[in-house]
Amino acid sequence: MKIDAMPDTHDHDHAALHHEDRLTRFLLPEAGVRGVRVHLTDTWGQIRSRAEYPDGIARLLGEATAAAALFTGHAKVDGRLSVQLRGKGALRTLFAECTAAGTLRGIAQFEEDAAAPQGLADLGPNPILAITIENPSPHGRDPQRYQGLVPLEGADLRAAFEHYFQQSEQLPTRLLLASDGDRAAGLMLQKLPGDGGDDDGWTRATALFDTLTEDELLGLPGPTLLHRLFHEEAPEILAGRPLRFGCSCSRERVEAMLVSLGADEARAAVADGTARVRCEFCGQSYVFTGEEIEGLFAPSPSAPMPAPERTQ
Image 1 (cartoon, one colour):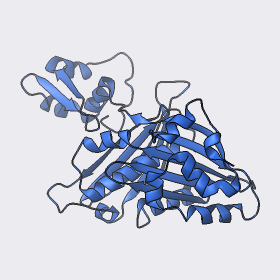
Image 2 (cartoon, helix red, strand yellow; image 1 turned 30 degrees about the horizontal axis):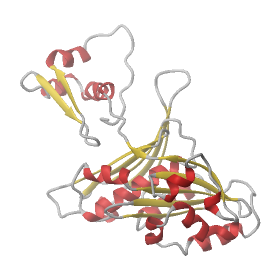
Image 3 (cartoon, rainbow, N blue to C red; image 1 turned 180 degrees about the vertical axis):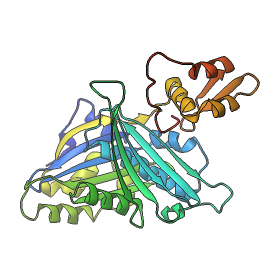
Image 4 (tube, helix red, strand yellow; image 1 turned 180 degrees about the horizontal axis):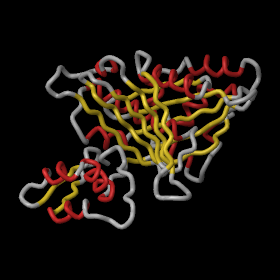
């Protein structure tokens, strides 16, 4: 089947042929396998430009960003999905987030005084991998939060995520992630739940998947890649959507962060009559007067909304 003759939306062919930032969901019906393909250019460029990263950490961040977008293609995400790796080594945190609206952001935090970290080993001993989904609550202000938390296992992000899905969903999953200075991309295959597909469908699909190289994943337009890789399986395009850089920081979320710090620490942030908080993801600055800081801790007749765990 010729993939580039199968538009999933009115602008699918145009977007995919020109390497615009995009997520594409597809199905291999005979094999009983679903898939997601993500390609990022401008989005990845904007995320990387926010900070100076060692080459190895930049590569990991690009792969994590592509992965966060991939996972929104197979999970029910009405709010946002985040991927976070935490450790106590030279590399402290690797974080990427994708929203239901298709906005992406990411950041890596590392010890600048240590030797430049280059890979997952720099997370140190006993690192943790967390995938978190936050969806709007239909009955209240607090979002519904679902989190999977597992020890990080695997020599690279691909292996770590495959292990995560095997442990959390118990569904066979394959991933290929790639990133360079200009692009980030990912391809994900997952066996459909139940008995969908013929007996050796998963074996056939993964054998084809294993022929794909990182250079091809980064360089080939979506229709070309899927046609070359899976044309024998008659793939069907299910849906697609554009992706872009975007930050979910807001003054309200910064206020909640300040409240979570406590009155003493928030007051200590005031200098020359104001406190300034800068979002590390997008660079947006939020300025609070001393009076506004005091107002955050004034008694309220209603119970306050629990503060989120992150600053932005």
